[in-house]
Structure formats: C-alpha cells, structure tokens
Image (cartoon, rainbow, N blue to C red; front, side, top):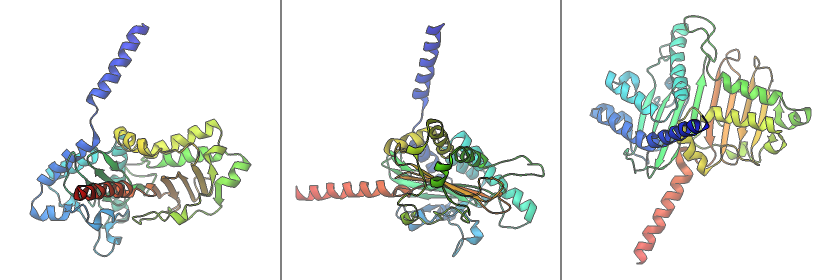
Length: 352
C-alpha cells in the first residue's frame, strides 16, 4: 500500500513538472494572438513602445476620473467577440484560477453599481488591454489589464525575469447584500485573515503594531508609479521577530492571499529573487478599528515588498488591496540591471 502511494505521488510530481508551462511563454503567445487580431485603428490604441511612459501610468479609478483623457489601451467595449476572448486568454496566462475568478467578480461589480446608480461610467466593458513592446518568448516587453478596481501589470525581461507589480484588486461593494448577486464577497479573506492575526496580538505587541486609532482614507502608496519610500522607511509596526510561531504562520497565510491570485509559476520566479516574507525584516502595522465594521487599514512590508489593504469608504464596504515592489514595480530594478550589463558588454566589445 505504501509503495502504491509513493508511486502515485511520484507520478503526480512528474505530471506536474512535465506539463507545467512557463508563464512567460504563455503570456507572449497570448499577447501575439491578441495583437494579430487587431486592425490598424484598434492596434494604435492597444500597442505601445516598451519605453513609452504610458507603461507606468497605472490607475485604479474609473476612466472618467483619470486626467487628461481617461484610461489608455483598448477597452473590451471596442473589441469584437473574438478579441474579447483573446483578451481574457491573456488575463488567464498570468492569473491563477482564484485570481481569475476574483478579477471576474470585480468586473461584475461594475454591472451591480450600474444597476444601482445608473451611471454610464459604471460599465463592465470599460476594462482595457495595453501591450508594451513586442511580445516574444525571449524578449523584453510588458502588458497591462486595467479598469476600475483592477490593475494588473506584467514586465518580462529576456523572457524569464518579470514583475507582476503593481497588482491591485479593489471591491465596491466588497459584500453584496441584495439582488440576484446577494452573497457575493470580494477581498473579505484579506480582511478576516488580517483581523485574526492582529486580534491575536498581546497588549505589548499591539503597542507596536497599531499605529493609530484612526485609519487613513485609503492605501498610503496611492497610484504613483513609484512608491514613496519616505512613507514606509524606516519601518513602523511590529517586526516578525516578535511574533510567536502561530502568528508567523498567520502572517505567511495573509501574504499568500495576495500572491495566490497569480499563477504559482509566476510567484515561484518572483520569490526566488526576493522572499515574499523576510524572516527578520518583515513588519506588520494596523490603523483604525479592530472591528471590521468600522474603518480599518493594515500593511505588511519587507525590504522589497509592500502589501496594503484599506476599507474605509461607503459604510465600510469599499476595499482596496495592493501589492507593490518598493524598487521593482514594472520590473524597474531588473531592467536597470539588464541595461547596465548590456552597456558594459558594449563597452568591452568596443575596447576589443
């Protein structure tokens, strides 16, 4: 019996490795197919040079509130049925099943808001696709899928090293209480898991972890292309070294909720370079009430990453959750290293 179990586990492991597909390859194939489906007019909206400043011009507001002329890229509304399928295929090349379901729920919330408010800018088809550079399995390029409360940004370098930040998921309403979608909840796990962790803290731990009894209006990192390090360093809050083993596990589970929205292969490549939870230099902080029915905010930060959550608006039913890389949003740090090495190689070749 034990031998059969070992054989089964070994077979499962082999199948997993044999059929695991490199996400960079999947992204490049999906992006190529999408671009091939476009005519000259739609391609002009969707396709940018890799060095275009638009690549770092991300927003999680509705397009109406983005100045000067709204959100760039090609919207689902402007796509043919076939192009919409290809756009969703591109999205699926990067997200996990959980992430894809959550992204779908967020888009659905726009329809719920439209039915409630009647505002024309509430539209589940106002989500845009942008491709930066030439998609290639060995190339350097990027892409974005973005609309209200959803901004997913991916950068690939030499077809291997890539960034998935900023990664933003929002929800309004976070919980649907009426209508045919009653019971739908988005981002509640991120709140409940954090509440469990912070509620478990001792009085001494809470003195360090709880920064203020008043929550900020929103996530502090905002929508800037670069996170303002002065707002987060030196770190405030409770260090991981002052958590007990159970609390450390809860912290890891909390960060996992942000990571698990993406394909495991994506997270594996990112965490190889930078640990999602640093064993000594991770800090947790809370602001606002520990009652989830009142305004609250928390963050987890490491030397590399920032995970932020806020639920302070619309009767505490409007949540924002973001994953940022202090130095590497849009692959900025790896691109700098990549170009520096390329420059050194060119200089050496000239000397020869």
